[in-house]
Amino acid sequence: MAGSLWRQKLDSKEAEQITDGPGYDYQPDWSPDGKSIVYVSYQKDAMELWLFNIASGKTTQLTTAAQSTLNHAGRRTERSWSRLHAVQQALSSFSRGLCGWKIGNVVRLTGETKSDLPRYYYSLYDMEINPVWMRDGKEIVFVSNRGHIHGTGGFWRMKAEPGAEAREIHYEETNWKARPDFSPDGSRMVYSSYLGRQWDNLWVVPANGGDAFPISYGIGMKQTRAGRRTES
Image 1 (cartoon, rainbow, N blue to C red):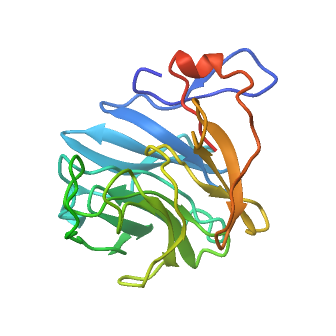
Image 2 (image 1 turned 180 degrees about the vertical axis):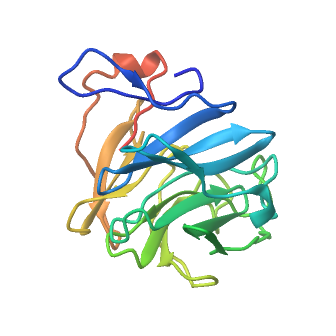
């Protein structure tokens, strides 16, 4: 809300402000144990990951510009917790690559790949966004336009290791808003897509790829017209 983070109990009508720093705080995500929140803060022309401790109310900066040469205007910082190693790992995506954080240590998982395809309105470099951890914390899934001329691409899966080979498990145009996540048992993936419809809805697909199935059908989509952001 206006660059600060707030929280609210579901059975309450009152919200509590939890951050009030010099930057613009956004994209919060709870840790699996509910004790911390990782979020992005835009300060001094840089977007970095920060950690908020629920009990103490203290914030800790997890990344700095000096840790990565990718901290430039084209960077897309996103956050995603590893379900297996709570408060241990986070993911961030950039315009040209994915990075993984194990608190205090930055590891680049993918590099810059210049495509030979004649793209008309997207960069010649392959894009990689919306990373999410598999439930076992050993692999990630992300959205990439590798091998495609038009659109944002499909879902790719790879081991969370630098230079590991990625494979496309499902392709469709998701318009950059897929926001994938996994079921508790890790067998299915839910995401947002406007596949074959006018508005975004939630879809589910097997974790290893396959046919997608809609689980929402436009009910309440009037809010989408007003700017609602559908997330999974």
